Image 1 (cartoon, rainbow, N blue to C red):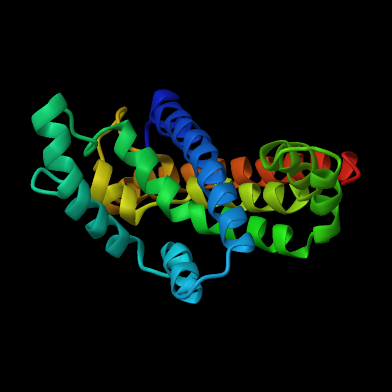
Image 2: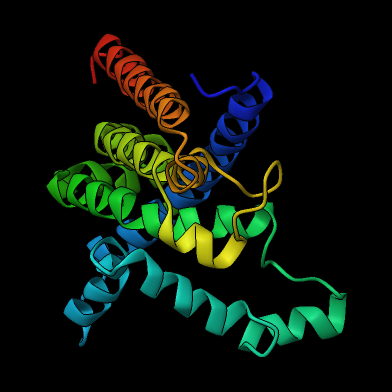
Length: 226
């Protein structure tokens, strides 16, 4: 069996869990915001806007990575600004990995939350507004709790998707051991190096972790009786 120590598994696993946690958090915030906005507004070009928001789900990850490089690279629109004003680059660090994973997993939360908002009876919102609740209070105390099942389902899928993110992360954050090397990149490295048994261990760890996350989330969702 290929020789390796616990750190060779621990580092990419913990890094993946950290990146996935933050990317799911940001994807959920953005997904809920845009889902509610799109479920309520009717405007010319709405179908196009919906397609753009869903696009990361169908585009090849390398294409998304290229777009992120164009925007956040040294000569990019935001990248050059950040470099000049703050001497900061989001590329090839943990922030880049989180950004890539957030963009890739965002549509999963967006689509699920949007469906939940659209399926909700509008009378609930109308009654709350009639009783003197503001739109913000109505959203937090009525709409969000009633739509929580769809949001949780989308967030679960986003977390699982983030665990396996590879292409966009590789292009934006690189494959730097103990810094940006997630478990998907570590598997790629070990396969390329011919470390088949080590690759199998990493694959099993990633698979078990995803199964545990989905199982626990499913149990919590069932116990909540939503």
